[in-house]
Image (cartoon, rainbow, N blue to C red; front, side, top):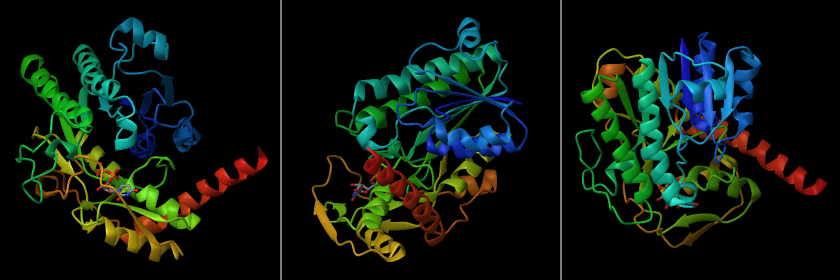
Length: 332
Ligand code: UDP
């Protein structure tokens, strides 16, 4: 198949692309490189240099027409599938330019859906657990409509993704575009940006360096963390599933408080770091945990990587990254 991946240089998408290239598909990547990194595509480039195509492009700008496709990839590619994943996902990144984040979710998704409509491709949108906001229902099933603040600092992302889901459903109803929607819960693993600002990368890097572990608030807020290889498998299963069902939660239901997570990471890194408490960001959800019954039932999918194994693999990756950065600092 010919498969387009928007945001393909991002950490999650690059793991998915390894699967797609491994299956023999031709993969076309659009990425602005705002948070993605071209080096994330190196394993796929090595495996299939003639089947991986990359164009630096911000999806806010039109790419759906035949003319644009020719400019970006040298031909008007008749895509079979579109994984529409482009959007900064870390709170610090998506809040740098919130208006751009909203435009990415809404205009970017409009552009991607127009392309899907024109070439007859199936489109999978990577939505988010943020559509549930600061949830009043716990754990969160897909049927929960959410509790989202539409005027806060997180709204650009939360409401942007909610609008993106709406657009997908309207293109399905009005134009017959075949859609899939994944609501992704917190994910971690190799190829995360070392300065991503999210909790797992922060804690591991701080623990490696022996710096204080920055727990926001009193650390009682919870999250449920999925290792990236499990998530990539889930996205692939959802895209290729023939039943049209609504949005599907993809995440690991193992729930931890941030204080517990800090202690686990200190232990696994065998670090001398201690915990320091910083103010809780505005609108920070107090709990988050997916109900994954639909994914189990429709996709026969569930996460298999334990937190211990996932963190251990991530620590190896972050140790290399910290070392690279320290070597670079020394040489300049
Ligand atoms: N968090 C923290 N210390 C950090 C980074 C994040 O305690 O250095 C907390 C944050 O307040 C939130 C949770 O960890 O409650 C997860 O934050 P993250 O930014 O990873 O993702 P979110 O789930 O909020 O989108």
